[in-house]
Image 1 (cartoon, rainbow, N blue to C red):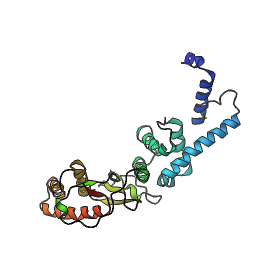
Image 2: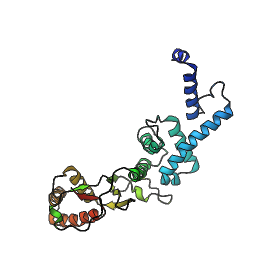
Image 3: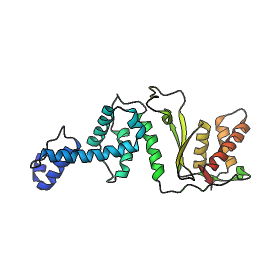
Length: 254
């Protein structure tokens, strides 16, 4: 390895030393023939840009961590993660990948990854290129219609109630039941969320898996799966829910 470095052109070696120092100045020396003061300025500029994007992309995560905790987390990401994208707009996704695959700190909150994912979803939907289905009034004979889930509506399941986490609510154990949410960008072009039941979550999965099935068929499938003693209640209740989701542009006619 040492021979390989020695055989590299000097500018490539300097680039590697430059990048290594900027990522982690505690473990890499200042490149030769570069003033430490100048390197410190470069390092601060690079890190502050990345940290600023993280703070903007994950505001709740930033708020629940102390300055020391946040600095350590941002430094860890900056030092160890090899970004696959050159675009600053994709730093949030890179940070999420880092938390999922590279960050292993037992001192972190147990919900940290789920909270980060929830915040990333909000940002991803806000900049997505797809258009929300247009607002439509109530439709007669909704049971016979075929519907799809909007590409700007993401049904999500979490162990923790991520939408409630704040400096005043930092759970240490997941509740008995998962939290089901839909995060969506509606016809008003704003990102919203609603909490849903496990049955509604499953219903949206069935719709996504069976785009050629009618609303009636999807509701009946969920009722059968639920083994409810009165399946007609599942069908009637689910129909009311779907009509509400339709009015919010979460589902649309297929």
